[in-house]
Length: 420
Image (cartoon, rainbow, N blue to C red; front, side, top):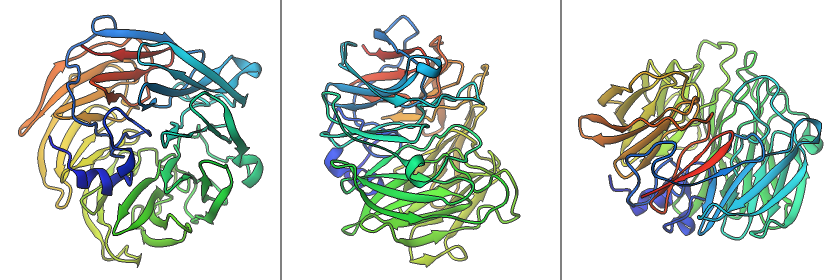
């Protein structure tokens, strides 16, 4: 499957970062879970095809990022009260270059897959920004030196999420943008990636039913017509913010018309071809809306609605199609503008759900269950062909990274590099 230059620029707003060999954020160089062209592994196991395996010093669920020969990952360093928020750097031979501690971590207290290091870091090739459940957000250079550090919870208020913080920062016009959506005052903040100073902070509080105001999603950055917009999904609304000021310029609601309680959202939205795709309702629904217009477009921009969805995995949107994975393992390919189903397929049964989001590399689709059961599938015009079903023998919630003809898989215990 060919991913065009238009996709690279419009979807992620990362045209300067789209060179081969880089994976600068959670959803990759195109911002949508797709990889650059390459020859990626189709058969492997926890032993076969593994180029190296590095043990991590603590637990974490963040997806690694890659810039040239640097693999950056966050995790806890140490256990219990002595544990710290940590950022690590490996090279592509598996050697750890450095490890930086950023202060006391706030470990998971409620969910077996949770951790204090769920948000994925970001980079512009010069700076690294990491964010943690503790509220700490820090900028580092590629030697691991801390350039700046601050704590959003100490500055702007305590985290009131019921579960572990999961939203990742995104990069927009030299700013790290973080969305904080929970019970009480919610906001979007933009931080200068070089200095750590606040560029802007805007309120994003919606009065919603109990827990439906809470979100664990990651924003999407879109560049179009010389402007950069940041699309945020949560509290039953998608909002578009001007990257220069944070001002809301577009808003679409209607994703909880019956005002259901406890409809917090974990799966992020996906954007392609001028359409936003939104999973909601705790895995019950998948909807789409046009990105056109200004102001409140709730009554005019909804396109289609499906009575299935995903609670945790984020769909892929690329080249006019949506690739959607449910928590239990059903994959569906849809036309992004009409919702017409091209095909659907049930993955072979396995234990555990999908907490990791899928990754598409050419015509290869990589998916991993929480138990470490992975699926390598070839996408065809008529469906999926399962090529390989390895057991990675680790607890995995991070998304697979396809880069430099290799596959990086991050688990609770190990960071694994797979290749030919």
